[in-house]
Image 1 (cartoon, one colour):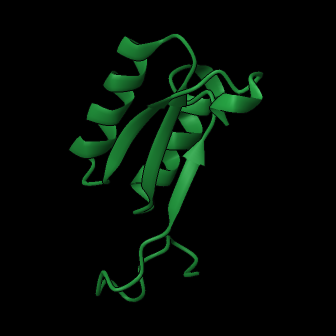
Image 2 (cartoon, rainbow, N blue to C red):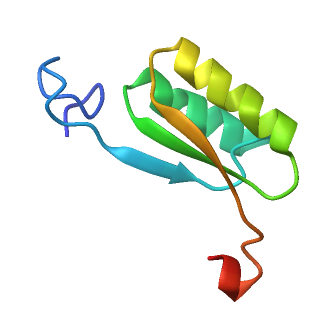
Length: 80
């Protein structure tokens, strides 16, 4: 991986995907946005904050990052 992100020399041939748990709020949001700025494709996990998660997705997309939201209660094995 390049120092400044997952792209190889700007060709777009390599893109890494990150699943950021709790990405709708606080530190998870900050991490998701930081990865998006570096060119990562980001899966924005949330448990109950769908509106906040969708806002993070919109912010990531405005940065040029591919992003989508995923809802799951990670304390429930069947949802993982």
